[in-house]
Structure formats: C-alpha cells, structure tokens
Length: 202
Image (cartoon, rainbow, N blue to C red):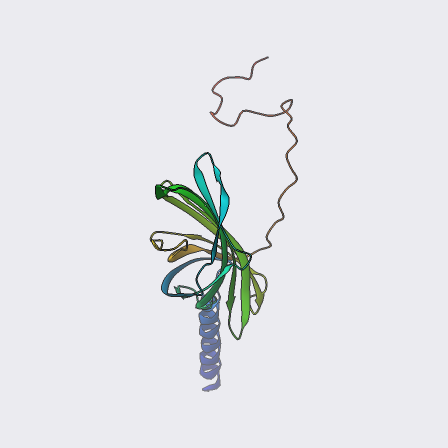
C-alpha cells in the first residue's frame, strides 16, 4: 500500500531536480559586469614621428604592441579572470598640453582557462575629457556559440589608456556580418524623423 506514496515522492524529487537544473541554466542573454582588481604590463615603447598636424605632435605605438594582463572580477564565471590585451595606439596632442589631444587605441583580447577561451578585438577613443570603448569577444571550446559585447565604464585609468571596469552582455547568437555599403536612393524612402504629422506631399 506504500508504493503509490513512494512513486509520488520520486516524481516530486525528479521534478524539483529538473526545476533547479532549469534555474541554473544561463539565459540566452546575460548581463555581465567586470571590475579590474590588478593590472600588469610590459610597458609601451613609443616612437615619436618627426611630423605634426597643424602644430599637433603625432605619437604612435611601435611595431611591438604593449602586452598587458588585467585580473578582472567578472559577475559571470564563464569569463576567465585573466584578461590579456595587446595594445597599439595613435596620439595627436598639443606639445604644450598632452591632455589637449585625441588618443585612438586598438587592442586584441584573450581570456583563457581549462574550459576554453574568448578571443576578440577592441577600440577606444579618448579626447576632450570623454572616453568611449567597445569590445567584441567570441567564445571557443566550452564557450563555443557564445559571444560577448562589452564596453568600458567609469572609472578609467588616469595613468593609462585602458578600462578598469566593464559591462555588457553574453549571448547565444551568431554575429552577423556587416551589410553591404549603402547605395543612395531617395525615390522610395519615407521620413522617419521627425515623424510626419500630415500626409506626404503630392
């Protein structure tokens, strides 16, 4: 007479285990943040070109980009803590004030552990007291089929052209290729902004 009770208990246990497993499964799109705890680097060897642009000096990285390792505390364990970066840049600046200029930096990224790796590229621009950066990472191994889009957030390192905090998303989807170059055509377009308030002109 106890067998139905045992069967019900087993079914409930299996159901609860499945529910826990479903809850632990990462969502197709997951918000991720990262805070840089430590930074190590080989230093940057610069080459000051003997040229200027209307009075502004031009400084570029050498043929051997700087190597850097950031130890990042990520909110998502799928991103390994060691973020390796190779950096190269162009700086156009006022000889009287290095802050009066623009810095354009490009990078390649690598995060790797026993499960797999993430590889990608980044670009950021500093100028006029503002900073913008964006990174695209592609997963391999256990992270195959995953992509990460990140950007730097305040604060940034005042002593170097790198971010100290990140946020973005990890998602399961294919990175679409860029579309073809646009071909100007005004014969069949509609006004999208400002939104028209009346009928189109005849």
